[in-house]
Image (cartoon, rainbow, N blue to C red; front, side, top):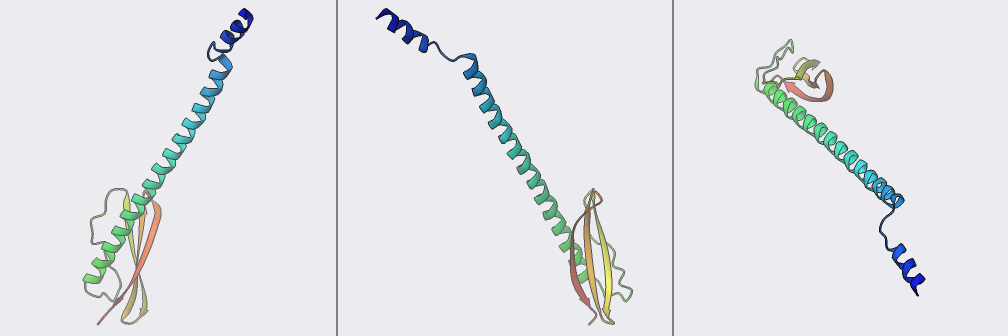
Length: 123
């Protein structure tokens, strides 16, 4: 009976070093997964914000081009306020003597983000 109690006490002594290391490894792996997911989400949010602002800038510039008088040379200036680190390039292609295709390209820190096009007609 005494031997049985001794065995029972030994089996209930607590966690050993091996169990603790395994538990720490599992918690560490979960932590790495969480940090990776957080970094991916943060990067995705940054890309979304960049595209959203670029779209807004392009639409605003195209609306500005539509609001000004038709120019035969197709030279339309940037007519909106552009935030720092962003730039716009306005290009015009003459499709017909009274019709132009206006293209606005948006760049962020020198990298191309998006391009939008519209038609401008001389009535």
